Length: 91
Image (cartoon, rainbow, N blue to C red):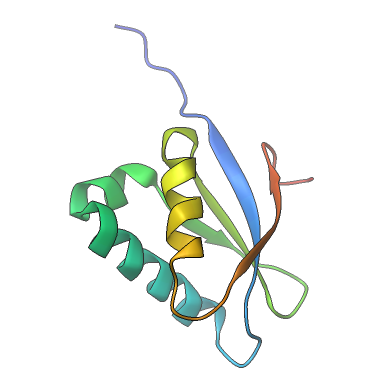
């Protein structure tokens, strides 16, 4: 069987700047786990990258779980907005 690299998507998420990026990521992971379970959380391969701008979180996920991540962000208690989605981190 051939091993292929998983395709990823990068999301720029706008959040309230009074919270830290780690707290926002924990909130997103917790909500995702509530909605889709522990196994899906691991398979989504959620990662956070440092953002130079305050109030913007750069989140990456597996392409197969993109719709679930977008749904999770929409169902958060604190309002968050996805500003941009890209297939590469540079964009």
